[in-house]
Image 1 (cartoon, rainbow, N blue to C red):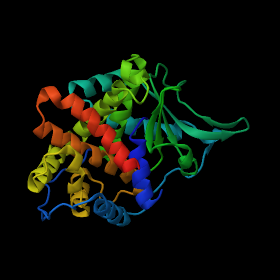
Image 2: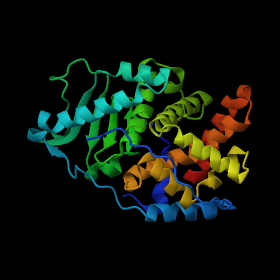
Image 3: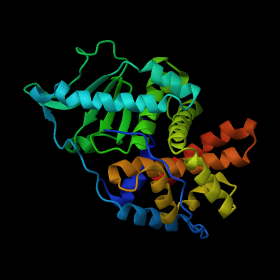
Length: 310
């Protein structure tokens, strides 16, 4: 995917690399509301402390799978997990319903090793007509991939790290990447534009909006409610300062809401990246007139990825 790679680099720089069921949501606990950190260095320290409180992710696939083992016994459970995720993301908005419908037929694969070298398996013979291939890659291939979950438009493949994913996070990231896949298959302008153009950036904004909407629905509205509360308590109305509310304590609070308290670093890298962007997007939603939001959202994406990718 084109998923905030610069933000991943920032989070990784802070703390190194490293059967889904619907999320059981409880009312968010009450946390103290200290003044947000005054500067960027302090928020780096807060995120570093948060990442240090979590372990490395558990990979269920350490190495490339021998070709002989890439069979239905391996891929059928993965197919069930993806189907469950599509069922969860579908009801969120009209756009997610469209995504779930467009990719109701899909193929599943894993990275394999064979006499021919490294390749990708696919269950397309058992499940013909797939509109996208979703491939799980092993720990040993982690350095080859720009993100934990990403869409390779040239091959029409969504690559997913073979780690234990909390249901809400897996569903939201899958929705993000399939939104890119849908736009690419429609030859939408944003999917073919160069990265310096607003059209490319706005497609990213839309994909992150899809991702955050899924997280918010699966958290029964608590995701947006919490971010909005943090902004109100801090009295921050400028989106370029919104990241300051993401202290370790508040990241811990979001863990409880999203079911990521036990998640490892590979999962948390995209989660923290999403928080850093979405808190700015929420600030825009709350404080910027509707007619000006598109421009502000584009600027927010550029500034956030530049700031946290530097």
